[in-house]
Length: 416
Image (tube, rainbow, N blue to C red; front, side):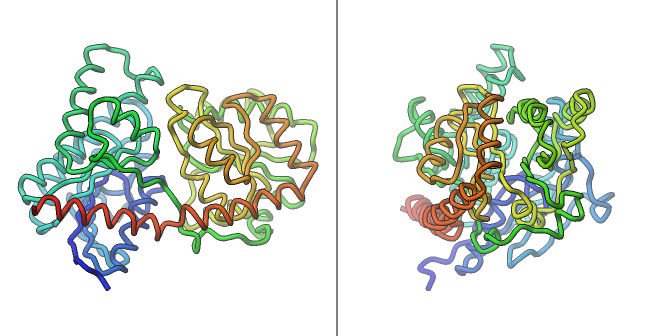
């Protein structure tokens, strides 16, 4: 029985069917809220991430209203660009900010609360404007510490631009009814910078444990990929500047002498072409690189693998990150080789579902793969531990219920 039926407006640049952590998080949250009796409207753009190609059914259009699992989806025009190059990506986010305000302000109706998930600040400004127009609070969901991540990666170096962006960041935190982060470390950083702790909450990423479930090795998929009888080491996800995938290729080079070990890399991103060129240059014919796959295929790819890689770059800021693929892998009962520090490492240590190495440490990564290659029972044990751990702590329905209580509290406080 629902105590308060709300109309929840979700604003996000990325959404299903795009393959990314934010789209999966918000789609699964929204679906659960609908099942609990709430109305959910999603304002997003035409799908195009990460390759920058809009599907033909959306081309030549500026706005489309759809229905998905009980949610109303308002898709708006976007300047589509591949996930590489700051200028074109910025134009894409700016175009969505403008189109969503122009085209979705009336169709979105009268929400009780707005939830905006931020790849950049542009969509947050849409939420701020709509919160004024609709006289309702907005919640700022922080998935990355922006612009800090781009500063640490060297993408933004101009001190004046950095200062302006940091001022805008704090302004939006203060304007929001709540700030929700996906990690404890993000929350601590925001509070240290002057935002009241009472205003900041943590709702971690999680997983649909029914959709991502254990099972035997997917021999059919292995056969399709030419991986029959092989020990498969997989990386599934974005091939971006954050993941240190050159270390994965150097690890694969160390494993050349093992005829039955194969490295599978599935996904797209800014570094994909560079990595493909490095693969050719190093003669890594035992590394199979595939483009991004539909989300529905991810459980099959997990179950076709003997070990899954969760790597990040060796940069201090990434100590605050928790790669969401960790939870999906554990839900599928597969062992993890996690090359991470900080909060992600602590979670993996508690789960007893992973062999953990330092980020970008090729020697440790190679040793970890060989340990699982030589001890298959260890892999099975780690997989069982992970499934039990994630089912108890990171199941998406429980996280969605926690989020819903936060939304209700924010609405109630605003009315008071």
